[in-house]
Image (cartoon, one colour):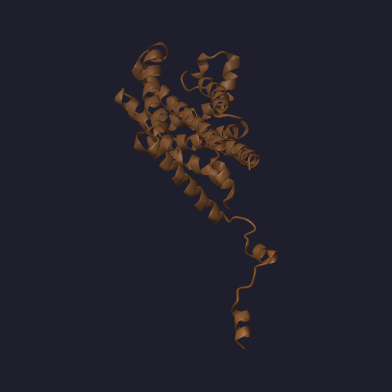
Length: 280
């Protein structure tokens, strides 16, 4: 009797079928969101321990706003005051694009250091290590946008759109920065080093920002260059932020800017995940 009870109470060894039955076939949406937020919290703590990561979103907006305004204001608009409504939204988009460029560089550095080798052994969504740091970067975009407007106001800029127009422009800039960051995230997954990521990102950033209407009106450009500027997605973002900040109007340019952001995410988010899987 005792022998039978012992045999009955002894734990049964799990078979391969039992393990497979207890294994989730795929990670649910709720788990994906939770894991992405966990990765975002990790990136936020990393920023707090490395304050130099905020230099490009704290010093750069002040430098770019003062430099471009005083250098180009008199020649393009006749005075600094008249140039501010044109240049502040432009610098807003330019700063956000420069800030999101660092996303790919940091991603490549983590991959080189072997951080993602640890994530490979964890049952987490493949997009979580990519999207998590990008969600944390929303804080950096918000800081850059706020400082750009604050610097412009200190220099005499008075946005006609009021508080809600300025907030709308900031939100649109954050959305645009987050969407364009997927481009640099994809570059971070395919490049071989952090230095090459930075070099490729600069080649992408400079045409997008400087060959746009961020600093100069389109009607001052030659025809062939104006044609490119008009289809540049950054130009739509800049025009939309000007409509919001200067006039407080939600125009068609806002819709085109959001559509361009959605297209960029739809193209480069899958490419980033695919490139990330190649390293697993």
